[in-house]
Image (cartoon, rainbow over all chains, first blue to last red; front, side, top):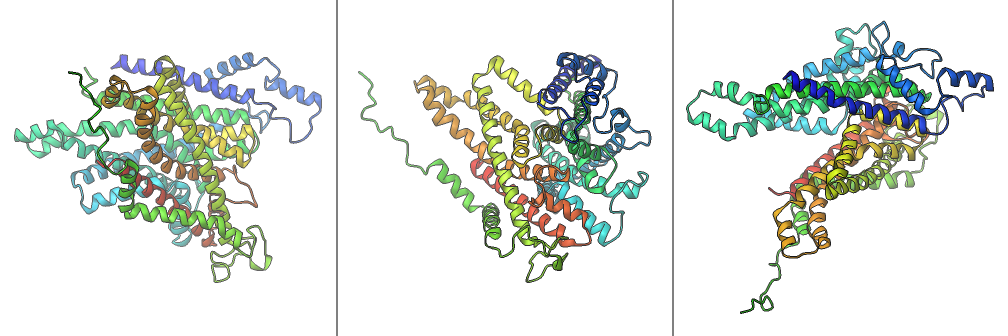
Amino acid sequence: MLKFAIKRILVSVPTLLAIITLVFFLVHITPGNPFDGERALSPEALKSLMEQYRLDLPIWQQYLLYLNDLIHGNFGISMKYLGQSINGLLFPDNMGGFWVTLRISLYTMIVAVPIGILFGAYAGLHKNSWFDKIVVAGNIFFTAVPTMVTGPLAVLILAVTLRLFPAGGWGDGDFMHLFLPVSVLIFAYAPTIAFVTRGSVIDVLSSNYIRTARAKGLPTKSILFKHAIRPTLLPVISLLGPMFAGVLVGAVVTEQIFTLPGIGVLTTNAATNRDYNMIMAITILGSTLTIIFNIIVDILYMVLDPKIKQ
Amino acid sequence: MVFSTKNMDLAAPKTKGFWMSVFGRLAKNKLAMTSLFIIVTLTLMCIFVPMLSSVSYDKTDWGQILQTPSGEHFFGTDSLGRDLFVRCFIGGRITFEIAFAAAFVVLLVGIFYGATAGYVGGKLDTIMMRLVDVLYGIPFLFFCILLITLFGNSMALSFVAIAAISWLDMSRIVRGQTLSIKHKEYVEAALISGVSNFKIITRHVIPNLLGVVIVYAALTVPNMIVLSAVLSFFGLGVTEPMTSWGLLISDGAQNMDAWWLLLFPAGLMIITLLSFAFLANGLRDALDPR
């Protein structure tokens, strides 16, 4: 198992390297630099800026130096807030920035996964019951309608009209401030988990080995928890890897809706001010997280899948 | 004795054409037909409402600020006194334009890329699909914002950026489909009996791809609507005084006291997205009646 884990981690290194290379050259090959435009800089000032950002070096040197920085966990200097390090902006001491986004994403996954699996399993066990119909309809609705529509509507109804929750802001990350944004995200992703679980339960229960177990006269409880549970969870687990990337992006969108001080604000500022270094950092950070989560999910899959484990 | 096929009737049995029966099944699906009707109606309204209305979408009227919905302004007015009804439909027009154009590019690139990888196979297939894997590793919204920041914030470019990162699913689906068709018994049988490659492609591969492509197109358009709307939350894409559903919702979200500013564009978007979802479902069932 350790061998599998190490192999899986090693395989993802070239993927990450390819992403970094792609993003780097995309940014640096595009004509123009971030300092032309806004206001005319004196040639001397421009020269010193170019030096500070290493833009005067040949591109392959810039690339190697950037890789070197990344290996040391350094995302470089912001092009908007001149001289400020991106690490300081992304990971501030007051636990804002990236930590806000990460907390929202993790809370969402921690609640959405068990709820989705429980609801989906119940719906699958009671196919065509009213509960099952609600799960199916909920999946259709929340797959089609994104958080950027449900979020503002939730604020309008629950925060502005009924005044149950604050309409936005972070507070100090307390329950009341987190409740709406995290709930909106849970409603966006739990239905998919439930729907996949439901399908998986229906598939597994109609499979031959479950029929054999029934024919042998095993009690239902032992069939469900001993024989059915593992194969049922497998498709759900392989869904979670790609889903985490979605939750991360969803969290950033939700931050915009609820004006939370996470990566969303940094992204908007970076996009409107052409802060290339910041956008590169956010893109690479997001990709790294996605890859790490995929590794975890793959290892979990291997642990649960009796066919791979030997 | 020489076996001759000359006198045998080899014509196919008289059945309804494949697409006729698909359409027949779709026409029986009430939910899908209602959805199709709603989509067509909304599209027509997006074309004609701004054209025929007496007020322009960007006409500000300081005497009519934040009016609640009434007979004069069906959807009320915004904080600049502009008529929300007209703005919703001009915004819908822009949203649909971006979505359909992006979806078209997505389909084109996805089909070409996937089919090439699937047909040619071998090393080229491995390299092409490896690239898709790499692009999958990048959270799409960040990549999209990166592209827009690089190439400038205009409507045309924003849809190119949207399309540039959305063809991945399509290419995977088309590749998988092409591979499986290539190895189907009926294709092998056709090959053995001497049917030309060209005929196999036109008779077997393309019709089989078409089903997947149509269903996926019906799913891609709403995805593009959502993505272009999400971008307006980040201040990218369409800019004032022109508008889009995303921009209207984003405005409404900042102006919660005037509930109509949020409710109408959000409602229109929900109706549209659900209609596309039901239509895609109906199409899938009609194309694959198992």
